[in-house]
Length: 455
Image 1 (cartoon, rainbow, N blue to C red):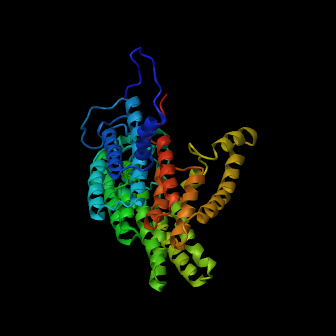
Image 2: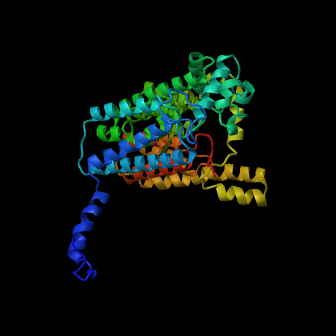
Image 3: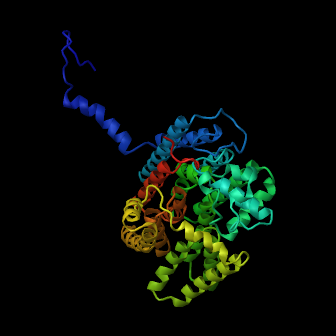
């Protein structure tokens, strides 16, 4: 397109020519083709894998935990690559969802196999974006040696396990439930004095749970293809949950079973199983109690008191029996954890101003009293926006768990595993896209591998 005359005088293009150039670009952005979305998603997973294979760097543990495929990546470069991985994964997921809404229908079996390949690659690399797996390994080593991870910190354990734990968490005892402790202990028994092997075992076991959850979701979801896109082939979740090796994957697996049973014909055994699954999930992370509350709420509205009492009783009994192995002191670390405020949190400014005006203790108490109310208000608003016809056993857990992720003083991207489950079982329209964006936003500011942001 020639925009000059022989005298080099610029001639503005005609409106018709501008439309001819701009319209294809706008169409490509607004309605990405499936191949483009898949390519962007693959690029995101590849960049996650690149960071993990070039450990140690700012976004991984301080020591490679498996084979070292590439030279260590400079911190500035690893931060840039990780941010690009998260951004591309978010765009790729949104693009695939857009293509699906416009009729794209890939084979769900192919989605599972493709996602499984990406999951296995990422799981065999050094964890990216978080140092939690190092803490898991240290708690597991304490338990494997006969100690109590709810009384003994990684710093007290010492040795090579403690050296891998982020400095901020070395003096912190376990805040995870007994099921998580036994999971960690089993990996530590396999790893012995080799923390890298313990972490590797945790990563591989977590990957298997992720894939098992994806299989269950594809089999039980309203739309198997969308379920495959939103979980097992979701580059954002592969990077956050698998790449980080987080226990939230186990909570998600148990939530799939509980929600699926809650949607079926009411039966005594279903209520007992729901209560047991919720109790087990709480014994991984106590935040899973939100799932029990969410499943009970629709029953309370129709006055199904017996069903609520059965589910609650079995859940409470499961929690009591499993926690009794360690005692009530296993709940003590949760009190200290409840005072923390993360970045970016709605409560950061409140915490800063309140600490200056009221003092740290009064501010922490105020936050603990206020944020549950805000969560419930937001959950009510989100529930009103769920698509018509969405089953209450799906819509309520989604709304409450998503509101928790958005309003909790301490929130991490992997916490979003809980609202992702109902979103996959029954897609929540535009709210699903908001969940993608929220997960990516949290991941963009919480991916330092336990190092924090460097200057």
